[in-house]
Length: 411
Image (cartoon, rainbow, N blue to C red; front, side):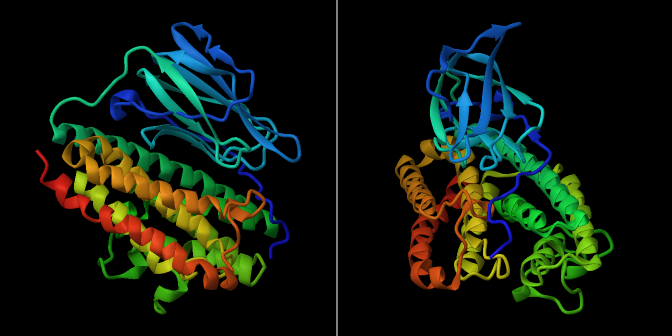
């Protein structure tokens, strides 16, 4: 379909740092590590140090940890992408929560580092696209566990989620900057790849940032609606406002297969609006029910515009957006999970199991050589698989939609 199906990675790395104080870090941290890694990370100036190296031998992409354990306390992770084109991010997880991530990694960039203070337990470093995507990393010593009332635990979750959203928006700014650079260069294949890499960021947090209206515009005026200006589709086209945002770029790159002065202009406008969104998103605060409603809303997005192929009608990377919506919903739920475990452990376990089922299903569509890392969502694939995809999401959405009331009324 495209001149080059293998994604070319972004030129700039972004580091998002999450502190244990903000997130009450506990749980699982799996990594992508080479065989033969040392057991304990060496320490310097009271900080344990772990190197993560991304590489490719032409057929396999690897994500290697220099150590598989460290004592509780500050740990600095330094990531270098030597040659991998399939791995663009490294995520640190605790209890399925992304507590730190690097996006837009590209071969040849100088190493980037971040530091987290971790309590004892088993965590995950996840490297999507690596031959071995996860491996256990153990932190020895005292584990930090949520304490206090259910509401105080939920508050810790909402604070952590706010940091997550800010990090995603920051990474989106970088990815859209890379898209603009590719469009400005006139390289169609590079621009197509950059488009696929930029799309997931907005889809992960769309339910949180869709309500912003620019000054001087009414809430009903799409000319000032940031969600419309960033993510409008043909199906909700306002003829008086016209095409804008990601899908205006998508139409040029994939349907017209041409970069014109109009493409350059609309990409520059997209970058400007994403920067405005970044400023606004930094001011967001959340209640527990906001996370619950947002998670349910992202799954509704899957059902309403991804499964039917409406979202990416020119590039057909709908499964990339599908996976991003599910990831965003799972992150919102994961930050609520410590509180929900106290409120309704049976329901919490059921939702966790359904997330696992959906993610396992999505793994079947992964293709590291495809744009965005997932197979093209063709009309033929929709005809055979849309019902299966819809049923899996519905089985998750039904129990997930019940938790907003529970967290809103918890004591």
